[in-house]
Image (tube, rainbow, N blue to C red):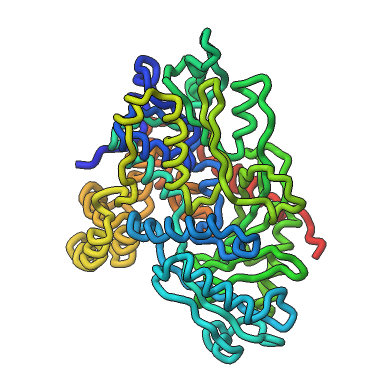
Amino acid sequence: MRNQFSHDLRRRNLERLQREKFDLLIIGGGITGAGAARDAAARGMKVALIEGRDFAFGTSSRSSKLIHGGIRYLENLEFKLVFEALNERTKLFEMCPHLVHHLRFMIPLYQDSRVGMFKMGMGMWLYDALSLFQAPEIHERLNDRETLERMSSLRPQDLRGSYIYSDGYMDDDRLVHETLRSATELGAVIVNDVLATGAVMGASGRIEETVVKDRRSGQEWRISARHIISSVGPWTDELGEDLFKDWKRILRPTKGIHLTLPKDRLPLSSAVVMAAEKSSRIVFGIPRHDMIIIGTTDTDYQGHPEDVIATREDVDYLLNVTDHYFPGARIREEDVIASYAGVRPLVNDGSQTEGKTSREHTIFNDPRGVTFVAGGKYTTYRLMAHQVVEKSLENFTLEDRVQFRATDTAVPLNRWTSPEAYATGLLSADRWARESGRSEGDVRFLFERYGREAELILNEAPKEATLWEIEATQALRNTMCLDLVDFYARRVPLYLAKPDHGLPLLERVSQVFQRELGWSDSETTSQKKALQSFIDKELGWKKTPSKA
């Protein structure tokens, strides 16, 4: 029997947050907060985590969806960052094979490329060396003919050759949900849609209680915890100002946007790394499931993190870079399925340009009872989580530090998706399709996403349930999904990958939500309208004429 990470658990956890005292209150339910909750709970700490919106609402669901060392960071001489990321990449392949997958990348080089074949080759050897040669495959060097044999749609003029190297891609939002579910099984008390709004200071000058508000009911109360961790990403300065009147801003937020295309409009044999003309910026073309992701941009952003969207200028930039490398594909805005934008919570280090700003994270203790973490790369989330919990323990007694010593968190997130269980599940998918009477494609899709947990999911599903009704039930019962927007944007690839954004499925999917959550007809109608408004907002750039 699975422990359900559901809306019912949210209700029970809200009650616990009002009456119990915790060792640690983590504010922020992105990947760093989720990792910290899992790390701390595994140590035996009594942990609470609140997220002001949906889990992975911010940066953690709006990434390039890569698990990578960051080959471009070698140019900034950030060797420690790359080494740590490559080490974590190796561990994530083992921890969650259903979420993190091996992917080959091609870097085509031309006569006018800013980096030549020799220098890039040195970088490739360094990249493999920093991974301790533990990548699934080491790099290859190809000449121009071999490059075009691998990727025939590339622009052939002035092509010198290419390098092929290994990294990984992931389901970023689902990695957050699975990490939170793992933390819950270890005892953490976790809720979404609960916002931290202030603090009650004690006589010692430390926070004694955190004032919070349930965004759904409007109820306010105070959570009592011995210490607080802030892991709110681009909301770091906003939370700092809510808690402390003398807060000094530490972030240099930058915006990154991505586009998705149908796979048949840009058939890629591997991911491709494209360099913007006369710039050090890199744009990836990433084959992922039924789509190609194109991104990203890197520009300073001054708005509110919740309001970030792609603009016409952003979209034209990515389309122009893609057209430069693949002119024969004739990719135009009509080919774009979806766009998404996020804010990187980079720590302001005084760099002159956005691209030069370090991706290193920073962790520090505020003497008033909060440990802040900001910056960093998704790939190193587990390392950051460990470090922020260790830093927070500096505020505890020596006896506590001995009691709450670190444990190994580089273990599978659940028992159904260890490498062995995952492989076994995939081998049994065809048999399950025959015995269940469901399509082989649907059953394999579920086993690829959930490993052997798919067996439980299929056993629980009514025979008449469609694939997306099964997915909706899974999201509601095991990811604390509360809204249709949350489902379409951060649980399944409907908005991003389907040209119709999955809207023809909406009636049947909404019926599952209505049944599970007890929605009225008016609430269901309101939820449908909110989903359409979300899509219209994300694709609002289409109403602005192109200047390209």
